[in-house]
Image 1 (tube, helix red, strand yellow):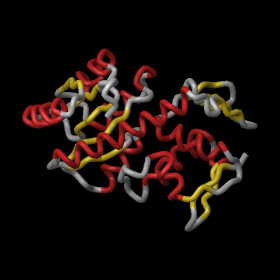
Image 2: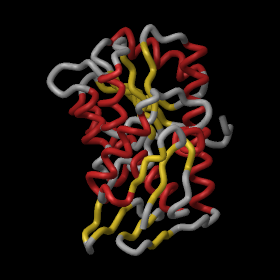
Image 3: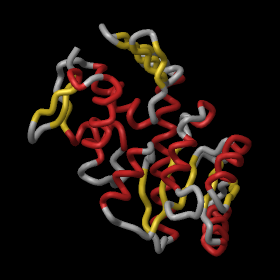
Image 4: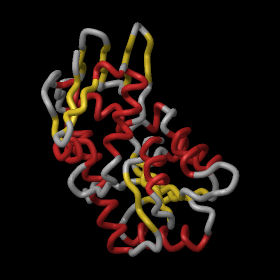
Length: 233
């Protein structure tokens, strides 16, 4: 971790012992930590604390992690915040729902400190890379025939209407549309959008493509069976 930059991490879990365990290990590694015990408090705390990363429990009363993630992703001030789910559940539908809501990673309980720290460093490394690309001015705006993709503001303009997409959906759209009609392999997409060090399910790309088809237009996305996807103008 960059010694000059102290990353902020928000822990959201309704189990106090989990919060204490994570806080201890994260503080020991030099992170600034805040916590919340439910979804509503998480949203309020995040808006004030502005964390770089949120560790979010899935199973919580009243507002669960999926709903909380969906609400967090609607806040413009948190558009670059990374969200990693914490859960003891490993069913495919939970992971799909999580990525569907805009999550960046999935960490299962029981949590091993060394594994957790390695995943956190990998996620924050991705954040550094994305920030560096933005500040060095790598293709800030991309205008296609039917839509405008503004990477500086992280918005999509379609039919003169602004659309705020979850971060991973935006990154996937930006990648595919950067070279219309070029086929991107699944491996390329995983590496560019999620990073080599982040483990995601095989259906993750399919879920995000399905969402983009519904929002941008089915005609713009073509599946190349056994290979990957391409954006069609």
